[in-house]
Length: 309
Image (cartoon, rainbow, N blue to C red; front, top):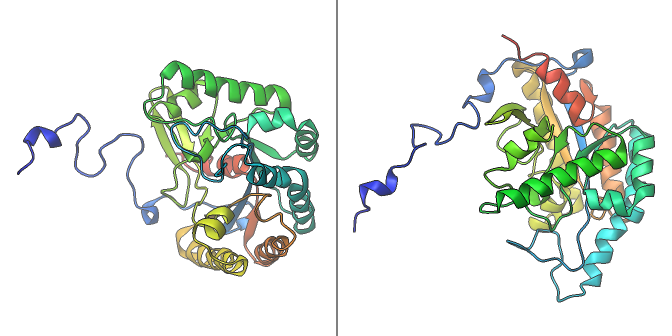
């Protein structure tokens, strides 16, 4: 039976995209970007510092990386805790060894629960990104607006209070959003977010409350995704990172500056049998000519300065 014609009629139906969140454009047609020091590739290393509640509700879905066994799932809970107690310090040593300036996406509840960890990061003057309240406090379609508004405001405001930082970036737990999340972020002073993975470069994202910038934090190179979702080896993850670095450097020769974004987790790569692969990836990237490393906010600042008419 044929569909009723009204099935395909709705306000935003247009040729091409059926929304007005951003302007459609080919990456190859955009204004070329120049990074500081004539670098061809900006490298952004983002560390996800996450708190997974032991008594997760899983509303409206069980968050990836969360508890999977009947309560109390101490094995998975304590493994996530291992990353924030042990693995993270292996990360910090590796960053210092190879001169990496990362950003840290932190659950605000973790910032409350682990003041020493927060203090270490703030003393290093590394950039913090708000990663929501915790990994079980999801933003989702159909969520009551008042509920989500309170959650966004509490997460951002409290992290600013605890850290003393401006906090201008955001990553939703599980990168999941409602139809209202972007507007709520702008209303709370967020300048960029990293939930959408549909580009290799930043782009302007429109909301009714003002514009955000969508920053390109690749899901395809994320350690948890490659190792635990795709079931590739640690050596394969290393090879993929190096391949991406090589390709983007080559592409930048003719198309302008590019961004290599790595999202990593201390409970995954901070393990003793994996940390060497992170060190090898950082060693390779830092040895390449034409690479400039910076946290997300600094990369965004240089990109925005070159977007005028």
